[in-house]
Length: 213
Image (cartoon, rainbow, N blue to C red; front, side, top):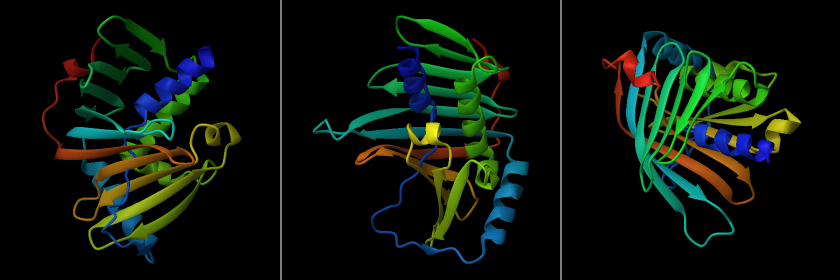
């Protein structure tokens, strides 16, 4: 039961997975150094990220996709607010080594550092935001692709335990500013979670109080 609860939280927290537009044609990226250099510069200059999101959950056992919407905020270092507003209200905050969740009935606080699963989730999330997860060759094999407007990075976990939860992660970046535009997490078969980020704003003033609980 406890392991199931942790896995459910893991999926709630994996918000940055993009999927390629069916109209876009991607080819192998020849110059990965230029892409990584641009990503590092963007990360160094980005102190906050604010965006609406649309999450699509596809399960082979269900006839229809599950669509959720909400608002995402990030502030250095590792302050994250993930707020679902439709069709239900659910709040996730990561700050000061703790993970906080709240729905209409319950509030819970978890110590990230004392739990290996939460610690791994925090590392993965922060790595996606900063882009340094793409350098983690011990944990993931990577494939770099590009279209006219986007970069697409496919991550395949090397760890057996991680592969039990995720087969692949696809992260899409905007070529104009190297920010994440969407994330697609492939679980198994046709099951996946896709999140698109819209109305994205960088380096806005986000009060630290937004990450308190």
